Every structure is written in structure tokens, then in C-alpha cells.
Length: 212
Picture 1: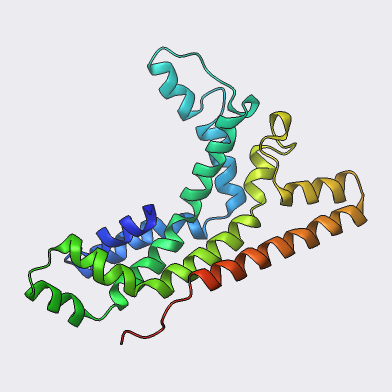
Picture 2: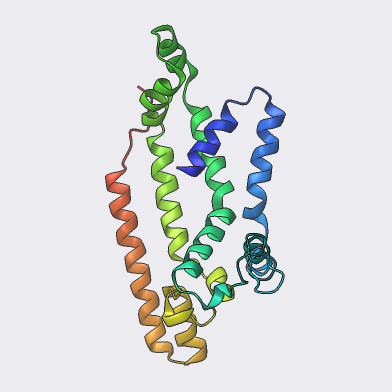
């Protein structure tokens, strides 16, 4: 929803240079090393001493908080970071999908009196089914394999393993506990989960690949 909204805003900008500029700005986190940006977020934004988040909290009279010793807030912060790091990729895809819809449909609806919101919801959105399917499947597969940020933010899985994900668990089982057999079984199970979910999504979101 967020990336589609941003893509729609970019697509209606009147100047091509502005479109390129904002797409580039949003895409920069995607090409930046995820380990490096995770470290910046961990110490520069979430750090107990000098972190931007605690500085903002201190401005409102709140005491500094160690976000890495929390349960739900830590997982939410990792999710926010992941969305920030990945948002530009989907924005580019959705922008291409919006601009790929033939303008004749939009112009015909405008002549019939449909407003911008109605034209987007009733014409462009349904015709972007193939873009939605691709984004959904790729995003799901990518998020199932997220590892670096969880390893940096919560290398031991956080309090009570609330930030432990399968990829981090595979790493801990294989390279810390040295139980390679069990780790291989978990990795195989992860592959089956991703494959099954991808097939279900592909079937549910199967789209007509033509505009006719």
C-alpha cells in the first residue's frame, strides 16, 4: 500500500526529471549494503546512548530506553527498517506498472466523466494485476530469507527469542551449535514453505497478461 501510494504520486509528477529524482532517492537504500545500513540504524538511530530515537524521547522528557532489551518494539523496529530498506524496489516496479497501462483507457474514462480516483481504482488498479502478482511473490520470497538485519539487531534472537527468524535460527544451529544435520532440515523446511506459499500466491493472483 505504501509503495503503491508513493508510485502513484511519482507517476503524476509533471516533469520527468522530478520522477527520476524521487525514484533514485527512494531506491538508494536498496543498493546500499544492508549490513552497513543495519549498523547505522542500530547505533545511530536505536542506540541507547546518542541514538536519534532516544534523543527524540528525551526531548519529551522520557528516559533513554534500550530497544534491544524489548520484545514487541524490537521486532517492530526491525520491520520498519526492512520496509525502509526495501521500499524503493517496489516503488520502481509499481511506477513501471502504472505507466505501462495504456493511456487510452484513462482518457476514455475521463471523457465519460470519471474522476482521477475513480479512474485509478476502476481502471489502472485492475490492469496492474500482473505487477501486483510479481511484487507479492518476490516480496514474500525475499522477506522469508531476510537474515542480515536480524543478525545485527538481535544476534541471539532478542528477549525470549521474540526476534528470532528461521534464517537466523539456521545460522545459530549450524555455525554456533554445529548441528549441521538439523540446520539442513530447517533450511529444507524453509524452502518448502516458500515454495508452497509462492505457488498459492501465484494461483490466487493469476492475472490476464493482456489489456484486451
